[in-house]
Image (spheres, rainbow, N blue to C red):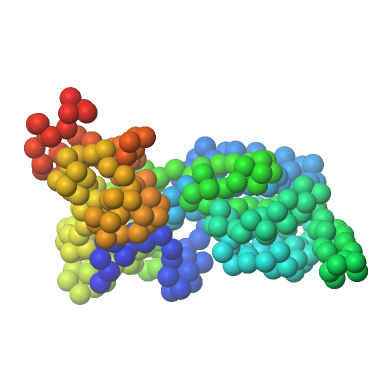
Length: 340
């Protein structure tokens, strides 16, 4: 059985990708949560369809697993167009884009995951494609070099990123719509868990589904992962039904506590408190102390700890908050002068 840290990993496994296709809602009406964002998207889509135009280019940003890829597919379905999917790290050379862009029909969507990791030379190749819907390709070298312009059909580029600050200003300025996805409240995750359980044929009662939702870190992907692991536990130890008690026992075995924190979350907080007096301490120092990659801490663990109020980020470094002391059962008195 997976440990909590494995369940909280950023990317879906190959098996999960296939299952996510089954669980993925097709239209905005089926998408649970992100109500403000959905209202905006409905307006943008309706207006574009009424004018007979393509949508503006869109960036979705936020922590992993919140539905950025799902929304890109939903927009394609709502607009009645095709979508082609790629990722920033895959686009190593400008020529990698030529085939993708030239194959798009009018109104089609090109979705680039992890767009902040697109190489700079490829990114610059995107600028005329996004603005003027054309590509300028240089053929031959030296005195025989010449430029050939390829006209493209009008398309919509949708980029997703977990690190919006790493998107260059020139690229960001070419997106007309920039939207953040926020963590989901337990009530929305409860609806997602119940829907996923119904689709996967998992028997669960409402209390069991809510227990999973409360510990899923506000993230649908994590909620679905936990649901699968609790299903395994229920099959062997709970008569095949996920109840609140079965869910609690399974989550305790996975070392996911009542606030959704796993062993690595607590190790990060304890390291800041016990080794560095509560902070401030730099992210590189924390990474070395806990034996985890700096980028993984910043992308996967830190956003949730900050959002829950356990961690504070300051210009001098990270600081454990009084709430972290309380959650870990560590006396606060005399330890945290910055918060007195």
